[in-house]
Image 1 (cartoon, rainbow, N blue to C red):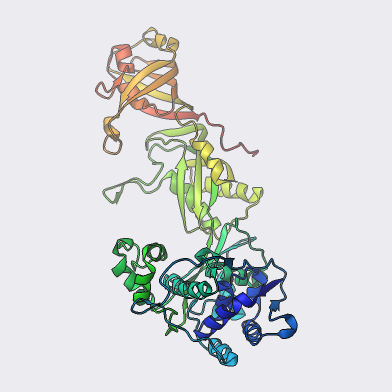
Image 2 (cartoon, rainbow, N blue to C red):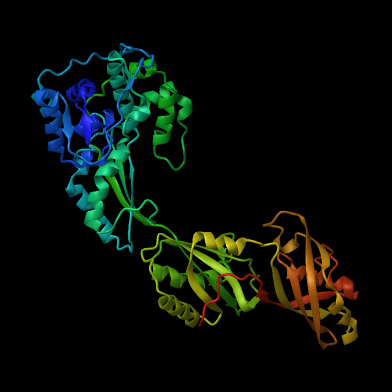
Length: 533
C-alpha cells in the first residue's frame, strides 16, 4: 500500500500548478511503488485531483491500491540551509498555491511536463512500446531475455535540480528536509513503467544480466540552450571531445550541478522551470547482443599465409590470412557486425603449425544469432575445413569470455615444440651434431630481433631451450627438434641474428648456420577442451 499524506499536499499542489506531470509529482513525493507509476496517466491525474480536494472520510489521506512498500517519508528536522527567497536575480519565485484544483489538473494534463519533457507522458504509452517492439522484431535477433536502457537529454538534470530547490524550500517551511537522493530517479521510474509492457509484447522476461539490450535514446532540441549557462559558471566541467557533438553531456552537466552554488543557479535558470516549447523525441531505438566467443585450435599448412592480414603502409601483401579464413564463416553464421581474433602466440608467415594446432579464440561482436547446438558447431567446423587446404580447425566450440583468459594464462610458462631444417656452410657428419641431443635447459640471451625491431621495443630477453634432438640429413643439412620456452625466437637461435642471440646453433657448431624451414609441432596448452570427432 503506497499513499500520499498531508505532508505531500503542498508539493502536489505546487507542482501541478507549475506544469509538472503526475508521475513526476509522485517522484518528488518519493513514492517508491513501481505499480503506482504503471497506472494510466488519466487515472493518476484523477487520483491527484481527488487528493487535492481532500477526503474527510479517509482523514484527508488518498491511498493508491498497490502492492509495493510505502514510500519514504520526509525527514523531520531543520531544512538545509540555503537561499530561501531567490528568483531570477537570485530569488526563488513565489508560486501561488492552486486554489482551483480542477484547473491544476486540467493544465497539467494538456501540457508537456516541465520536468521530464514528456518522457513519463507520451513515451509511456503502449503505442510507443509497440514501436520499440517493431524495431526489435525487424532486427532479427535471437534472445531469451532482455535488459532495457534509456539515455535522457542532459537538461533533464537541470530541470530536476530546479524543481528540487523549489520543493526543498516548500518543505523547509514545514520543518522538513528533502535530499536530492530521496527523489525517485526519472530513469528508474521510466523503467518501472516500460519493463512489464515490453516484456509482455516481446514474450520474454527482463533480466539485468541479459546479453541482449534494447535501448532508447531521447533527445531534445533545447538542450544546449538550457545548459549553456552552466558552461559560463563552471567552464572547467565542459571539455570538447572529438566523438561528442556537444560539450553538454549528461555527466558534464551533473558535475556542474554538483559544483554550482544555489544562488548562482537561481540567477540563471527559472525556478520552477518554464513549460518546454517542444516534446522530447526518441532519436534512436537500438538493439544489441552481447559478444559471443568461439574457440578452437588451428593448423596452418601453407608457408605463404600470415596469421592476420599482412598490411604494410596501407598496402596488402597477401590475399588472405588464418584469421580471415576462419572468421568469414563464423561471421556469416552468427550474423555478427565484426570480430576480434586472438591466439596463443603466433607464427611467421613462412612457418607451418602442425600437430594438435594452435589455440585461438574469436569474439563475435553484436551477433544476431547466438544459439548453436554441438552438431551445428561441428558442421560449421567442417565448412571451414572444406573451404581451404591452407588451414584446418578442430575442437570448435562456444566458450565464455572468462574462459578465454585461460588461453593467455601462463604465456611465459608454457612450452612449444619446433622442427627446424638447418643449413651449415661447412660440411658436417653425424658426430658433429650429436652433442646437441645432450644439452638440457640451455639459457639464451636474446635481444629483440632485427626483423621485428620496427614494431617491438629493444629489450634483452632470457629464454630457455629445454631439449634438442638432431636428425642428420646430409653434409650441409640437418633437422633439429626443439622444445622451448614460450616466446623464444627460434630462427634467431639458429642463425644468431648477427650475435644478438647468444649462444646460438652457429656458435655451438662453430659454423655459419641458417634456417631453411620452421614448423611448430605443438603448443602445449590444454585449452580449449578437446572434443570428440
